[in-house]
Image (cartoon, rainbow, N blue to C red; front, top):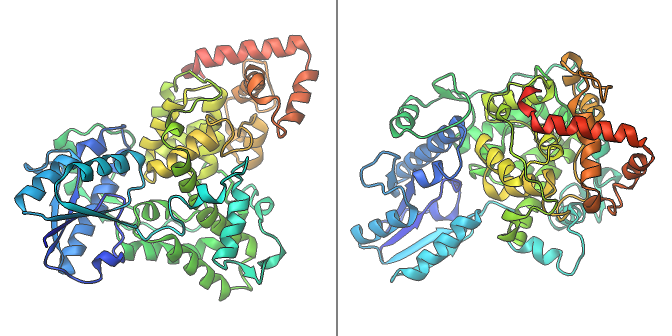
Amino acid sequence: MKTLRLILGDQLHIKHSWFKDVDESVTYCLFEMRKETDYVVHHIQKVIGFFAAMRQFSKDLQNLGHDVVYFKIDDNQNTQNLTENLHSLIKQENIQHFEYQWPDEYRLDQQLQRFCEAISITSKIYSTEHFYTKRSDLAAFFKGKKQYLMENFYRDMRKKHDILMVGNQPEGGQWNYDKSNRNKLNEKDVIPAFKDFNNPVEDIIADIEKAKITTIGNFQTNTFSYPITRVQALEQLKYFCEHLLIHFGDYQDAMHTKEPFLFHSRLSFAMNIKLITAKDVVKTVLNYYRSHLEDIDISQVEGFIRQIIGWREYMRGMYWALMPDFKTANTIKNTNKLPEFFWTGNTKMNCLKHAITNSLDNAYAHHIQRLMITGNYALLTQTHPDEVDAWYLGIYLDAVEWVQLPNTRGMSQYADGGKIATKPYVSSASYIHKMSNYCDACHYNKTKKLEPDACPFNSLYWNFLDEKRTHLQDNFRMGMMYNILDKMDKETLFKLKQKAQHIIENQDAY
């Protein structure tokens, strides 16, 4: 029976059981498509990265002896539509059976379900063999509970998979070392240069230009620095363990004008296209930690593993538990547009200038830059979550919807009304100064609120709390801030709100 197996662009798992043996009756297919490059405007490095990894994966499969059909973006037989390409191949190759792996995007999941219902041949769905959990596990875990607390899920994952456990107790005596993971960068600590794989991509750049794909962001070289194969991803993981893990936890929330990557792993792209699995990462980090107990504190390791088996698996589970309504949630009714400087970095606010420029230059920003700089600003200026989603999904190399959407619409923008985050993650300049050196050389003064050179975050913060009072005043985690707001002089609050409104109406002037 001749079988066609579809591989999506984020399913490049060479160790998947599909590929263990060569079967001459099986043909694999991968497609570069305008449907995927154009549904939002993507960063140029994101398009390059996906195409480079997909093309290399196709070559690797062929080198193993598998039969592969690969459509480049400009191939004549490429209809630029997933199901049309599949229909064409089924007819041309006389396919009798179709198989695919569970997509991690709701849109594709629905599209492939409809496709299988419409075709006259049999079909079968497989696991991607990447995650610790199944798509429905988290919904089952929280069934009947009022809150979806990540910490509860994370502790259950630790127990279930015996990760950093001593019997039934957490190794080191604590479940969570988050309080140890909030240090401002000590500039005496030398941060190793990031590992650059220098993958040649001149042909891909030419294909993108020929296809006239609209992109955002910057790309000044002809090489791609991130991993595009499993071997490279494992090299990056090894580099992280040997050079960066030792201070990862200390500075995972820190931000610095001269250090775009700090001690972060730069593995998110490789993981999200499934070059390596979550288990690969956790096992390697734990093995390295066990052999370097004298050098590496448990707070560094727990802080990293929490991101993988806690936050990452939690976000995927929340995505599938809350879709499709989650994609349009706007509980606190924000309606404004993002300012133009989100596409240029041209702003006098130093924190935003650096976080956005880093994103434009590297298709990367770490989680606190995304949450507490760009996300914080977008929420304080009451930006419509559709605008924020499109920007985050487009600009970041690692952004695929299952992880981007719950992080942006839920954690960052509080558009789900608190299903993911127990409170809005908003702050004035004080937090930004605490965690970075951004305020040191800024045009604006972090301590001022009403003066012409006052940091915009300060008036925006109090304005947001007052504007969204009906949505937030009963939140138990917001009580202290509303007590302060209620004691504020009415004339002062009026002036703060006036200033904030001026900022919101003239954002590109700031």
